[in-house]
Image (cartoon, rainbow, N blue to C red):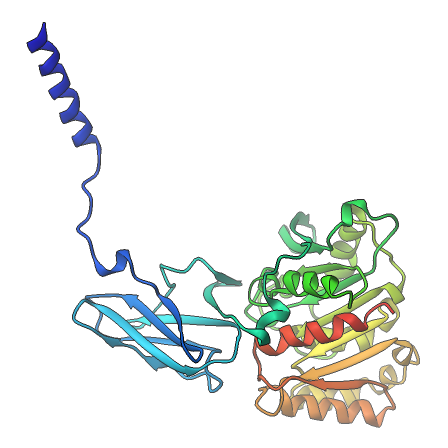
Length: 374
């Protein structure tokens, strides 16, 4: 009996060994730290790619936004170290032998329309405005519905402030739009909109509000002309998204309790709602945007009567922000503002000089959210 038991045990052990996949040989990647913050706020990027011949990294950690070559060591680890980087949150992308490659050691991601980028945080006092802190946090939800306009499922990200479940009465709404190439998840990823709002509430700087982040280009293409009839986003916004928000959340529906902001392409959408449907909003805040030269001419020549609409100057706040002179939309913004001046349209301006990046737009949100619904 003892011999049979030992044979059975040996057979069982053999089956267990066969059922388990062989363990891969250890590599430097097992313990690799792909992002390391060094003294002086230097950032070291690393990726294990022993068979690669060329590796680079690019991101808004570099103000010039230029591709940086990594160097390979004897173990097959490629690395690049920046100069001093100001504390904040940044995006970056590796390219390995010509192929954009996600950092396999970093799960912090920015979602866009056609892919992902990685995120890194350089901690410090300057980054406190968007840091994840020990404060009450609101909820970030995903709302799905079938769109009869696009004939597909539509997803919207919605932020509700801390304690929303126990609040009585209705709240105002901020519609917050992304730029070209991004999607409804970008403002809560790279934009950290929910954490910025959490921190503002903890500092008692903002009025509680619902923040709605929707897909800004539900149909293929970029719609940059003046007006709201060409871009299918507006039809979906007015006929589906806003009613969906009213159905699922306790929100006001009068113009003075609704704000609209957008960056870049979303900023064109913000300009269009301010000029072509101002009666629906009390606050409009275009960021890093402006019509292109052909559209500026079109605006002035074709829509002069529309620009004289008295409802435009009934906006409680028309706040136009840019990312400084390095913002790629800077000249377009100046040209657009000249048209607004010519037609007597009231607006205020602001700037955060970090170019056409989410660094600028996060700071914009931190600045303008306390101005809303006062």
